[in-house]
Length: 148
Image 1 (tube, rainbow, N blue to C red):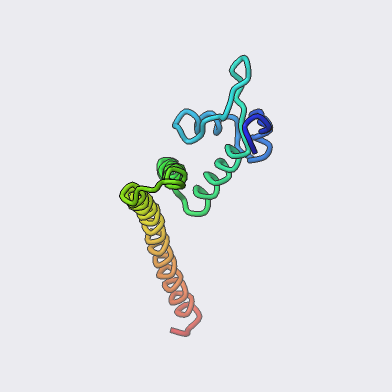
Image 2: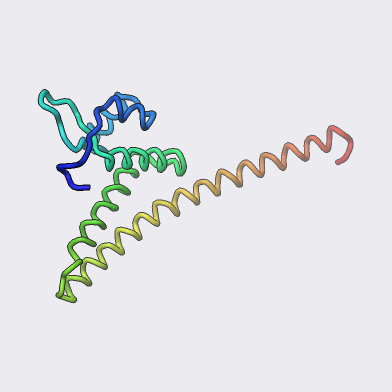
């Protein structure tokens, strides 16, 4: 959709669509996670569908993988950088320039993968601790019921 036809949402509509509070949206703007696409006369923030999608991605990364806001910011900025590199590479005829961009995109992707691997390892560690605790409880229950 081109900018002239794009429908913008006011903060109340974004709050309703995302379930996030006004305060959360303002905080995300303050720390650089979100930048309203436009402003009305008088400074009222206006958000695009892309901004809403970004907020939904932030929520997913935060709730699903437990990423910190700083990690989320890094992931989102990496996605944006990769999109820019991809756009710059379309129509690029110099193989060296294409190679540099592809290598940069690969490094960015590798960093994102490492963030996820680190989170997964932490989750696996938590799961092991819970499994050990469950085994301990099971053993104590067997003892109490004369089975062990």
